Length: 274
Length: 250
Ligand SMILES: Nc1ncnc2c1ncn2[C@@H]1O[C@H](COP(=O)(O)OP(=O)(O)O)[C@@H](O)[C@H]1O
Ligand SMILES: [Mg+2]
Image 1: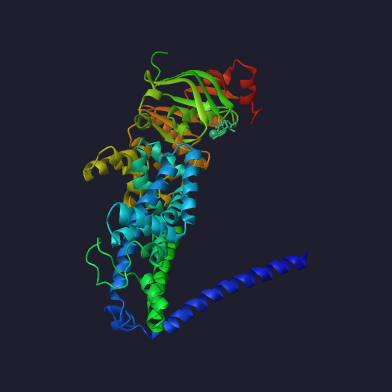
Image 2: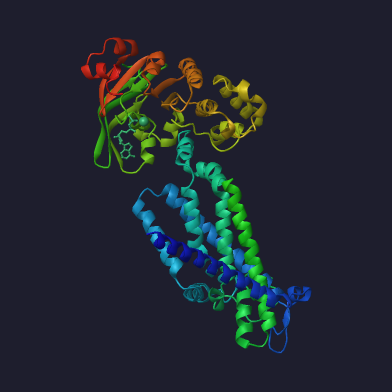
């Protein structure tokens, strides 16, 4: 019995150490290799070179990714949080609520390339938007919608039901209760959910391949135009195999953004707990 | 019984399949304190929650019979209007996690009071009624969660009053409080009955005896006996009531 417990303990500790080790190695490796590419010029100029990206920087991709991610976050947050609010505060039937959760789970399982195809056929072709930032951002927004919804639902369900009853007992409406009491209570968790979803969107190239991302563009001026994106640029650099330094540099920028955003999100949620 | 504010007619409640209140008929008179007493699990809270339809917020509940507020069927009223007119205070104090001031302006702002002066007046007057104003007037911006349990419960009563209700429902409001806070709240309720009709659930028979004008004794979901508090306590007409008052069920 004792030996068994010890074995489980060793196994758990090893697995934990291994996981942390892999993550640490990944970050260290990318940062180590990417650091030499990071110059002011790399961050603030457009890609150049005979094969695009071998020289010059990644500014249009940074700005493009910011656009895609912002649209994805906006779209995902509005729909995801609204869905969760409906489930927790308006839906009277637990069966409907479970059905919604099931649909969300299925959505979360859809491969991102399939999301890309969906966005392509609906937004790019059927609606005739063509490849553009809006189409790409919305496709990514659909991808992170279940991600945001799950976290929002959890946060909303954690609000003390006694407080909600107390609010209803004053004769105020559900909408007022949600706005004045509930959102105040779980805003940090909602925001952190959206940020994490945004990180997920920012790193995904697949939904953008058919819907918005291009090999080369200027710094985008309109959401109805296609634009470069960091993950897609990285992908192109890698398959061309000509400039691994710039590829690592691009990866460096992406991972830095993710790291900073995740830290911010965690801090935000943690501050709420205090 | 024409002067009753609340009338229950053959009112029954079931959770899923289990009926927990059986055909309750009674009338609650204005400007009096009515205590609902009975052993735990007999349906006191359920009865109270039926009156402001808070029961609907729980799943799987079905009701039969009717409840009238001043002759109006409560099921035909918009639930928000009903709940404004019938305030509720819960067993555990439930101040909102915001400042004392914001707790007090929460309902008035919903009802359209926007002027600072007007809000200030509502806050002050209702806190004064509950005797809390003198204690907290310097720190209205402080989080309501920092108040003591007794103060929190008085804040909740004051907050309920900001919606200008006609009836106040209280579900064992003192069960989480110490003797002194209980005393303060009992005095407060006695004073409040001049303006409001009060229905209080309590398992504390001494409390019922001290403050209630009328008593309703529930047993196993049935209205077993009711009447004037003094008469009920001194000369209960049924054996089970006598046993309960003598502490057999407690
Ligand atoms: N949400 C619920 N679902 C199912 N049964 C419930 C629920 N709430 C209360 N009951 C049952 O209804 C009966 C009455 O409960 P309650 O009104 O809370 O009694 P009291 O307040 O007198 O202690 C109890 O037997 C309790 O188990
Ligand atoms: Mg109870």
